Length: 124
Image 1 (cartoon, rainbow, N blue to C red):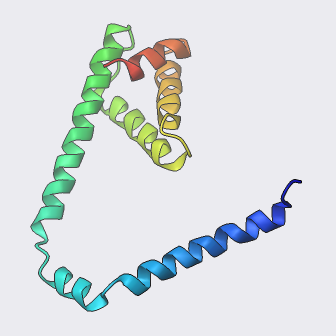
Image 2 (cartoon, rainbow, N blue to C red):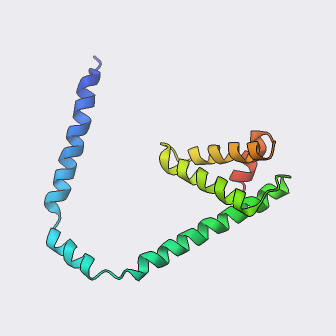
């Protein structure tokens, strides 16, 4: 016998609410407040700068690989396409969604077939 859809749709939010209640009841808010007051604000800035530097280096790597496939473009155009793909990596329900978008963007930007764009994206 198949479970009706409305039961499953109502159980999922209830389980989520129960898990959130468990988390909130097991957390000591005063300890979190104390820890946040002693938090050094330099570290997130340093980590953000390192993350951006890594993404910019990955964009350059994509540009070099694409150039070997006769897809020559400016560095900033590859940065733009790379970050659009990263956005879709976060927004789509799979980890490869952004790679598909980047493959399409690379191929479309240079008038090449999508499989060459895919080769520029997945090659290491």
